[in-house]
Length: 435
Image 1 (cartoon, one colour):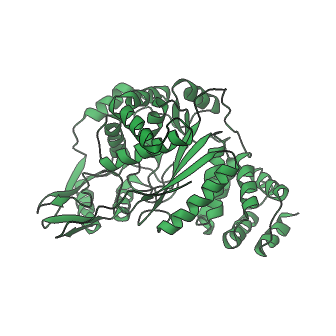
Image 2 (cartoon, rainbow, N blue to C red; image 1 turned 30 degrees about the vertical axis):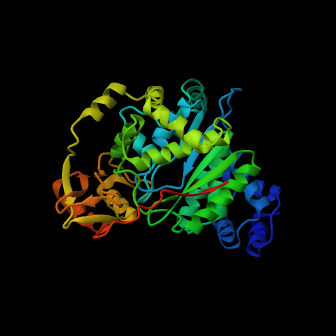
Image 3 (cartoon, rainbow, N blue to C red; image 1 turned 60 degrees about the vertical axis):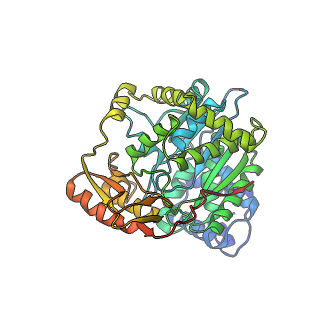
């Protein structure tokens, strides 16, 4: 079948054979298909969807468009976590070394932020000397020796996804569950995983605005992951409020280290421990979730996860002395301004989208893929829903490049907060599991 015939078939809602889908992906990756035809094909999928068999064929064809990591035989399961993204979501940073300390191997391939959604690689690049781009051989070596690695996608890993996503981003075809599923799973399957936990977020600052939307995406990925031989599970988590008390690359690294030291915000610890517990149960390393949570919490408390973090940083080129010096500096930013409450009461809302937009506009995020990120700007000391504040108490502190930018951001962030007279029911963080 020619590509034009495939476009017409999908436009009419007909199914395509695995051979046709493999051929389209291979030809596009090899620059034998023009962008305008691939864009039409993606738009046809956007409107007509993909049958389960087509979705599997597309995912595997994208995985096989480049290198697949190959690991030696080892009793330690290969596992990873993927998040659909949110504000203050730094779980990957403490989770990877925590999992390594629990006897897993973690080849975590991560991405950069775009828009208001922060990227794991942007956070890590605020660490002096840390290298996010490594050849496949070195990725495998670090995973085998340290137990975990957090790196970016190499040029030779899933190149079809990189090219297809670039088109989706400019053709209005990003919000397609079949295409999102293929994009996420093709990269995770290229890691040769045994088990995967998916953190699917919903809310004001999430890609999926409602719980139902998140549930649909989670079900699609869980089902297809299982079909492809990976034990896949999803948790649905609330992203109406930022995770933790900080948003911004370096500020989130600092908060991640606090978590690895057994401290830091409770919601960050909760979600990190929950992801670890789910993987422990999925792989049979814990009898049930409660025992998995206990194991994970112990590793955070006794320093085992922190030790793995430092090993991983050293293996990826970080200057540990410079990193510790940067951590130990005063909390005073280049320019700071506090947003304070104008009344006493209980915080009933801290809107994650507003916080994310402010961090982006300060320079901490990307308006385009070519934007230069300022790793030092952001927001910390965020007040959380359910907490009581008095008049004049700090709701958030802005880190900015200059005083005028800090003051403008502090004025804006007031709109993220609502203060009520009565106590509120604190929102549940982990709302549902899809297995």
